[in-house]
Structure formats: C-alpha cells, structure tokens
Length: 153
Image (cartoon, rainbow, N blue to C red; front, top):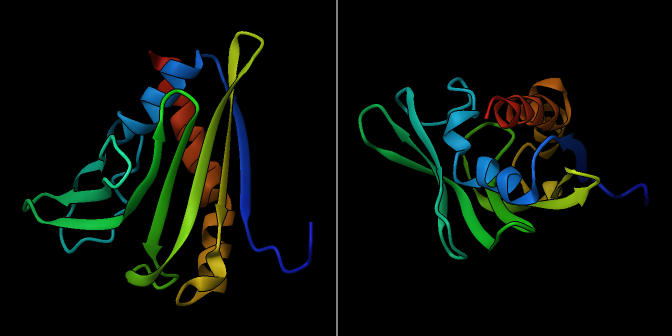
C-alpha cells in the first residue's frame, strides 16, 4: 500500500447469506446505525439509504428535517453498495465527497463484508476525519453494530 493511500479498510464476516447481509446493511441501516451518529440540528429519527443509484444517504431528524450525508453511486444487491460521504472532519456537510465501497462476498455459508472508505484527503479537516472513522468509534464499531444486528435476525 503506497504511503499516500489514506483509505480506511475494514472487513467483517457475518453469519448470513449475501442477500441478507446486503439487506441489513442497506435497507435496514436505521436498525443498527447509532442514534448519536448524527449531524443534523435535532435528534436522529431515521437513517436512510434510498435503494437506487442516484438516491440519497441521509438522516431525518425528529423535526422531520433531512440532512444529506451523501449519494448512492451503486446499489447492486447482493454484491455491492457504493456511497459518497459528504461530511467533513468538522462533522458538518462538506462540498467535497469521499467514497465508501461495500462488497458482500460468499464465504463458506457466511458473508465477508469489506468496506473501503477512500478519497478522505478531499475533505475539510481530512486528518481529523480519517482518525475518527479509522478508530474504534468509526467503521470498526459501526461494522460491529451491523454484525450484531445481522445475528439477531
């Protein structure tokens, strides 16, 4: 890996088919996304990935207001989900976007879920963002919450 590569890579294996793994990640995002992981002005009521390329990835606040986190670039169940991330290291909407690519591969009766968040250098406060999403409270913790939800059925 080149020294200039700033991507955050995480992988987890879940006890589910790729179809179920994809469905829980994308269609049921709200069931595992932490309520405290919100950038809107009010409490998070719902986290949503609209199920189509060109759709939005967003939060709805308890007041009904929407705060867009990014865009859906690829929605290819049960293989791949690609999203843009338009939130800077200051946890505010950012004019610049990085990319999150999530793949779901069969692995002996389970599914290997690989997440690569790349292009972080484009963001405001990029170093802070990379440190945050690369830490335990970032993608590692989020994937652990996701895996827990998958295992609960």
